[in-house]
Length: 509
Image 1 (cartoon, rainbow, N blue to C red):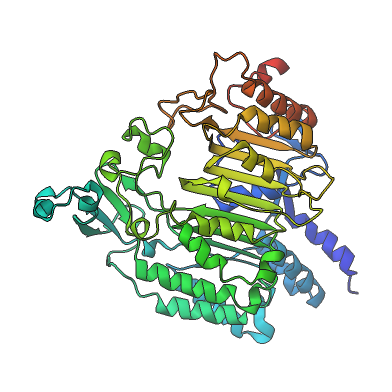
Image 2: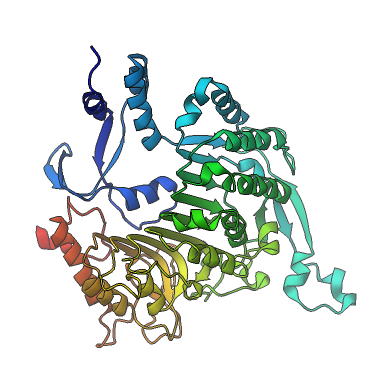
């Protein structure tokens, strides 16, 4: 006798396990998984956990699948069991396509050709990653003044950008190749990907991850195969315009430049943008001056992150940054965000500092605004931050913000004080659950500026002037942390944020 569907679902729920959130310390949402854990983990009701020595309860936990192989075997019992298992897989499993592994595309196409669409018919979460073949060489620059001295050119950066040799990537411990080229033909993989886009029916969550690029302090920069990148972007635009993405609600893009954000964002119809709920935008090319906190080792005094002279920095840009500098094309990124009025979650993770005040995002009328926000390496005014923590101007309700992560956010010299942001959260954000900050600071011209001369290794929640008696930055931050911990139960087991420069642990002993 066939069991009722509710009973089957109850049995299969045993394959869905719950784990407490790991400690969030010096938080960076540098992966899709980390962002999902931060933004989408549960906080509705407390569950009990045993850590081997202590039993404790916490509201902060994540859900995942356990023993997928056995779960798949359950599909063989009957059609009803198969239907119930597929429903779980649709929600929980990501279908991963790897550009450097053609087999993943061939396998997906085989599934497409199966009867009734096969497994491809229940794909809801799709990712495209493992694209190391797009970062194929290093550009070695030099300052060849002799070559240009007769041309009356005294622009140091012009001389550097026109004095270089390219060197193919060489084998390392991670490499699976021995035949290195400037361009790998991915035409076969991309044709298969377009075929998949035509066959897919309803993608709800989509993730794209391009390889990162960095500079070295001796005018050497990792570079991309621009032809290959352009071909992938064009294929992704084709997919985003297809009917398969009409139901998209969650989009995560890790792309080389802010320009690429605009290219992919423009492929989405306004109808799709209107019902997009979760948006994560990550810039992965950190080459060139001010592209990483690590570069300050050589960029002496560049504490505002606004140095753009290559010779002074010693860190040269990639070929993509020369063509599409992140700062110059950031309007493309902000314009895309502004076109998505119903967002619940937003993450912006930059390399070169971006200007948050350029964002003109207005939630729909009567909306309570964002629930989750993560910002990394942005310049901001207090007003531009508080705007993202608030309900729409037409709503009488408080902001819906629940989880906030701020990493390396700088306030302009005339942009207000951090305590104003903290006070806003305390007074106007009653649903706040997690507040995780690190390396908050001010521009060097701000009255509350405090110097962190080794930011690549000196960490603090906030860098702010100690001697000013009217400075309540640390006090207001302490009040938020205290409120979050009291709401969660304790700092040791119930609240998943590791607090830097905190005395809460000692207070509980």
